[in-house]
Image (cartoon, rainbow, N blue to C red; front, side):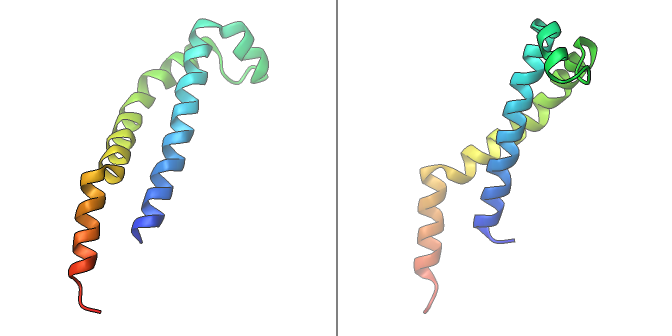
Length: 86
């Protein structure tokens, strides 16, 4: 898998998890509204369970996102690419 593909997968996955964290958080506090908007699929109990379990993958993807897009990582990648013979 190329670096660009890996970054895209991480970025999109992080976006999906961020949206889920927000929606499940709202499902805990404003459960009547979220339950109506999701046609009864996301009740308060399920929102709470999902909210508790989503934070671990969210933090892992956030750390990967920060590490792979940091300036130090980009400098290291550029240096490695420039050291390769043409």
